[in-house]
Image 1 (cartoon, rainbow, N blue to C red):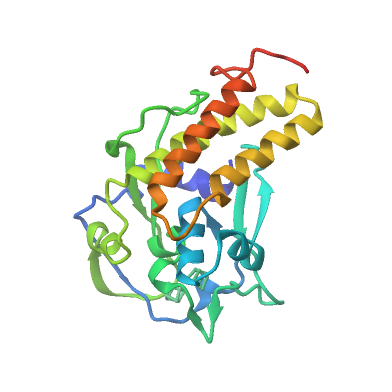
Image 2: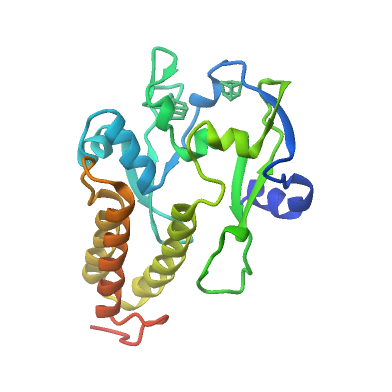
Length: 244
Ligand code: SF4
Ligand code: SF4
């Protein structure tokens, strides 16, 4: 567990903020949160929204601004914005402004709030998440000032992020189950077979969207396809076929 995550877990009750509870923060537009960043991760909906906003296909937006790597523990495909230059500037920062402000990645839109799901670490796979499992935390931002008072509900409303975000719950369910599948598959499949299924997971979850169509329906369709694929690969909560 990294230090930041450990700090959140250790201080969870103190950091937790209710959806209608006030917190104090005012962004002074200093721009520091958009430089020296290597950790702006995108979920599929973030990538879809950014591509649509910039009038690009998903593939072009990914190729221009992103890269994918395998999560160290999760073995899940992770997509991040690739920083530019020595100052590691976010590639979407143009003329000192966020070029996708209205649809900025969830992690940027939420800042200085964090959204977390608390679950039993002994569980292999998180299942059947409900809106009650979503928690919000407020961590000391280290920037701006406290001249404004906000609530979580109002903060999320600015970016059309629902409090009871069904997509966020569905994404976490998928992430947990597919990560579990990939962790076992990597150990049991020959490397070519693992590479094939890994790339299928990546393409279906992140890239197989038409920005002229609505996102949610395509996401549900892709998850359904993926569920069928991993079943065909022998996954039934565990992998029964040990080798090819
Ligand atoms: S996406 Fe926008 S808000 Fe987020 S780091 Fe990049 S420029 Fe800044
Ligand atoms: S969120 Fe913080 S770091 Fe980012 S522009 Fe506002 S004050 Fe600066």
